[in-house]
Length: 386
Image 1 (tube, rainbow, N blue to C red):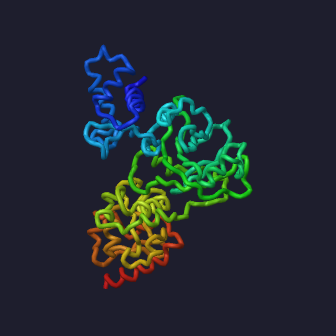
Image 2: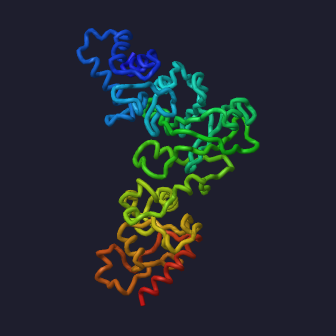
Image 3: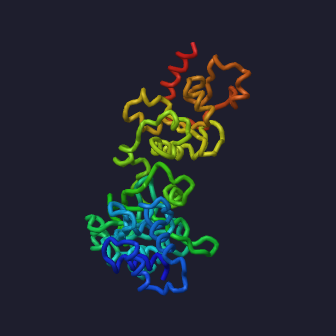
């Protein structure tokens, strides 16, 4: 057994908040420590690195706690929802260790015996010979096909529908890469939203992801999973434009720093930025620049001049490089309904090359729902240009 497992077992046997000296005594009864001079330090290290109460916490497992108990007093956590860490990698054996259950099988769904939890395991990219399950995220909604023996009235599915058990998701894009089995990524909690009528064996279910985040997780595998899109979507339910109450509530006015694109991954602009990035395929609306980190998702009609619907309307958004965004924000440039650039008289020809624009610059495309906002932007552009 590993040191983590032995430390867990020691606290489980003690069955109460316990001081280090008592944990040491229990460890000695579990394993032979006679050949180690540092086993007490190892035990302390295990406790601290696997506890979010510690400053040195760096694990995928949050097994131990000493909050509200006192320094040197430790207790074992039992709730998997507290122990598992969003976005971290897990093997099935490691998930079993969290559940205190040895064999999770190989199926795409597992019903915990010790906890009131149903676990979904899914691979987004399906093998050539596999059953073509339709599993994917659409923003904070997750589409899932059940097992082929299940329909909406199957007792285990009804447990999900009636929210009698917690549902959590472990997901990966590829089952194997270069013949190497890939770990699952913990994607958090799911809550039943609806199912697609007339589907059965499998039944197609849509969940709301409780832990989906518009902000953060840049460059991580969980962000890749959230952004992954199926090339063979077969469901008739489309959640791609559906804004859940939670996401709408979390969307706030971007501050000055966020508008400059410096910390958009932290707070505030996440939802809107993701919608604009998706629309413009992660590339500047004018230049063929695909460096996502520097691109700025801006409102065409400023926030302060937009009503509640306009603030969230993707048609009122444009994705620009920092220089173009600065010019657009200050009404030194605008665009016609055909996408042709309009340049303020305040900029002379000498500036153009340095600014990376010329009179032939234009939007890569103009969406119909942008036109009314471009017209309002031009009104102010012409006012300021006179």
